[in-house]
Image (cartoon, rainbow, N blue to C red; front, top):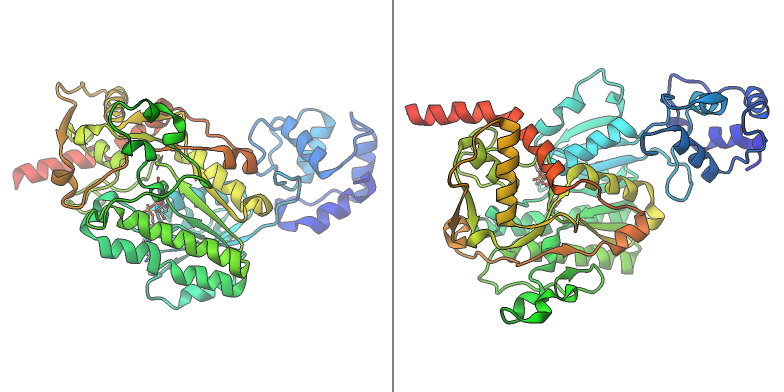
Length: 467
Ligand SMILES: NC(=O)c1ccc[n+]([C@@H]2O[C@H](COP(=O)([O-])OP(=O)(O)OC[C@H]3O[C@@H](n4cnc5c(N)ncnc54)[C@H](O)[C@@H]3O)[C@@H](O)[C@H]2O)c1
């Protein structure tokens, strides 16, 4: 783009991408300053603009470029003063979107809302039954307050949902029952939540031509092919028998009486429906298959901020045991292998999906960290070590105990032996890779768990003892 059209380009592209309090310098002053700047012959293509900005900012390019902290020299201050627009991976200006986020009050939703409020100009219609995890964003008088609205509604039976979808540019559906302890004990609620309740969302998106990012799960892969080989078979070590690829790996579930697969099966069917809406009716969609995203605000601690008799997912289960000084319960010896990814790494790639529709539409994405692979037993050992470090607590003599799947989850228990995400598609389409090691993500997460819950856990234990 020639220099003389910079101002027009900036004005026409995305007014809201500029800080409201800053005014664009006049065209003449931009031209003058560019003429006398340190790079006089600089050609301002959108891509080059981003390259220069990146050089001037140590923070990732996804940050609002209003800050001028590292911009040394005249060009840096010009760029900072212009509060340059944010650009996507193809160098296109990112327009502010109105996003209807269903399930915004949950673990992933709360981190995504934070990211969108702190680092972008997008607006969020946050839909959920609960708002506890995003209340800090909903307080009036914050600089993003006019960009987030909470709509307390149950999508099962609330006609307001359609209206919210209609006024949005993008719908992100995170709402689900997604805790393994529920799959066996509440299979009907699980199937209704993950399939039936998601149906109208897909239908409203299709009817109103609204783009959809639907959250599925790595559970749709079910069991690995390798798990059907006899013990000790050499092919078990072959990645082809356990590496999970979006466009190749079959989805293999247990028999119907193994109700554990109710969740995976409902998620698979809604994936197939979303995909079919894309193929037959042109729905613009992306499907995300998370592989164990973990971090602060995941689930609840039983008896503190959740029901005493409920069983959360593994991170909160093990944290609860650690804070109570109990051994961590390993189902069937904790031999299943899993990969864990830090929520903040994973949220980065969701932002890329949001802002790069031409790269994300029509795709199914595994999102995990194949480098953070451990058995559940190793995870328990690591969490014990890290928790002792962050809390100053002594390592217990017996850190773990073994329980059967039947004892822990009840009848209908079954499992997958190993789950390693193939990351080829997400890496190619969205130029993204996870960064945070298992140790680092555990350290920050358990520091949060300890600071947030340890005292309350102690109080609830002393109450139980007194009673
Ligand atoms: N966290 C992970 O590692 C992981 C792994 C696999 C899949 N997923 C999928 O990602 C999505 C989000 O997961 P999460 O970890 O944030 O779960 P979460 O339970 O923390 O959040 C889900 C949110 O949806 C809300 N919700 C559920 N039913 C609703 C309804 N009928 N109406 C309105 N709100 C409703 C809940 O109140 C909750 O706040 C889910 O679809 C889940 O299946 C997550």
